[in-house]
Every structure is written in structure tokens, then in C-alpha cells.
Length: 117
Length: 111
Image (cartoon, rainbow over all chains, first blue to last red; front, side):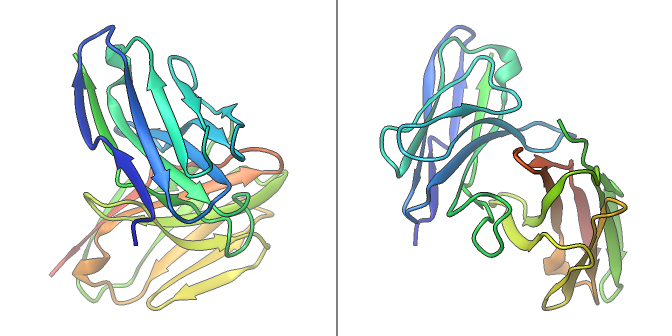
């Protein structure tokens, strides 16, 4: 019962390098999200997708790009990593929009810790 | 962007104590509120999804209430156990907007 799987779990990058985080869900969810978690702050939404082929900006989208070519996958890319992007990244998915009773809850992956030197 | 606040930031209680913490959010245009439980080195897991003013939800020893008119939700834990130690997150959304998470309340239950 995989749920939401993120790869890689850990990564160290040098400033200016690029990388892609992969999120895969096996629950046939329409909605997928990428958050970042920084000390003392709540989870902040980077980008999200309301279905295959669609993406939208969240609260802190600068420096990131995303793609949702397949319903089950949501990729987060950093084209030129900066130290300010050192964070723990969480992917989440939901069956329906976030307020829907019993179906709007978010299912999270286990997080990917990224360090940019 | 909504401002969602949680208090206290952290809490230490003895096993068997009951405890509660607060999530505050803007009350205008309220749509929904979620509570999540986040254990160290694991993923956040949903506890409750709440949308109606006056709503009360319960799961075992944990319960939550919602006041959308004044913009707060309480999470209660009755008879805390060490396995309740976790960070409790709330997230609130207005109509047409994405959820905004609070910074969390970190609960430590001492045996």
C-alpha cells in the first residue's frame, strides 16, 4: 500500500545545479501538491495540479517548475538551485478539492530533504 | 494569503493529562479546516476535515471543535499517552483559495 512516494529522500546540491523531485501516487487522485517545510513555519504551497496536464502556482513558486504529464506523477524541478531552497519538500495528493468532507484530506509523502551548498 | 496561527508552539504534558490547543484563522469567507498529526520522521496524517460552524469531530481520545464565526478550532486530547507525541498541524482555506497551514503545535507526552 504505497500511497504517496517521493524520490529521492535526501539530496545535496551545489548552488546553480539542477534537479528534479518525483512524486508518485497510486490512489488515482486528481489533485497533487508540492509544499516546502522550513523551521518555525507552516507548510507552504509551491505549486499544485488539479488534473493531468494542468499546473498552477502556489504561495512560493519562484525558482521552481512543475509538470504533470501523467495523472499519477507530479514532478518538481529546480533549474538553478540556491541556498534559500534548502528545505524539506513534501508532496501531497487528494481525491477531491481540499474542503470536501471525507475526500478532501491530503495524503502526504514522507518528504525529501534538500540541502543546497 | 491567510494567516493561520496555532498556540501554543510547544507543549509538555504528563502521561494521563488531558490537553488542548488552538488554531486561529480569518473567519471571513471560511471554507474548510483540516487537522493533521505529524510524527517525527513520518508523513502528516489527516485527523479531521471540518467545514460547518459548531462541528465537533472525534477519533478515539482526540476530538476537535470548530467556530467559523470567531475563527478558531480547538483540538483536545483526553488522557494523553506517549504515542500522542507529535506535531499537530491545522490548515484553513477560504472559498476559491488553497489551504494555508499553521506552524504547528509540538506535543511531548512524558511517561
